[in-house]
Amino acid sequence: MVKVAILHEGNSKKTNDNQLLKLLIESLNLDIKKVKFIGMGTKSNFFKKDNLDYKELLKDIQREAIERVLFVVDADYEQNDSKYGGYKNTKIELEKIISELCLEDYSDKYITCDPNEKCGYLESLILSSIPQSEKECIETFLECSDFKSKENHKAILNQIYKTAYPSENFNFSHQNFNELKDKLTDLFKGIEKWQYYQQ
Image 1 (cartoon, rainbow, N blue to C red):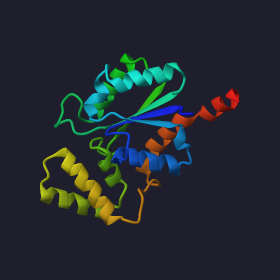
Image 2: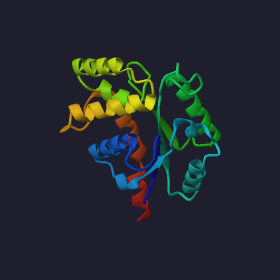
Image 3: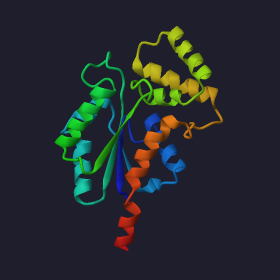
Image 4: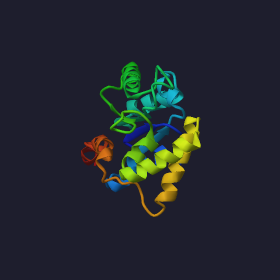
C-alpha cells in the first residue's frame, strides 16, 4: 500500500521532524498509511550514495512500492559547515545526490529553515510562524543562555515552544508552512488515480 517516501533527518520513529510531518499530513487530510518515513540520521548521511537507506529505496521504486520521494533536510548554517551548511549549499548537494541516484523523475526536496532568512532548521521554521514579540522573547532567552551546541539549541528551542504553547499544535495556517504543504500535496498527486486503475 505504501506509495510515497519521505526522507528526513533523525530516525523514523517519533522525532521532531517526523512528528511535524505526520501532523502536517493529517492536517492536509492525506493518507498517512501511504507514506514510508525514512529517518536518515544525521544530515551528512543524505550525501552518501552508498547509504543502505538509498539501496532499499531504489529497490522499492524498482518494484513499484514507491512512486514518489520527498527529501526533507535542514539548511543549517554555512558558517558551521562550508560544504553542506546553508540553504544554497544544501540545495546544491541534494540536487547532486538526487542526480547520482537517478531520482530526478521521482523526487522533490524541501529545505527546512526560516523562509525569510534561508538558514536554520525545523525549529527555525516553527519559530518563524509565531508572533514577532513572542519570537523575540525566545531568541533573547537563547542568546542569554549561550548554548553552543546545535543539538542543545534545537532541543531547547523545541522545549520552549512546547512549554509556551502546550495546548496548541503548530500554526500550519501560517504562510511559512505553505511551501511544505504544497510539496506534501504534490507528493500524493496521482496516487489515488494509480490505485483506481489497479482495481
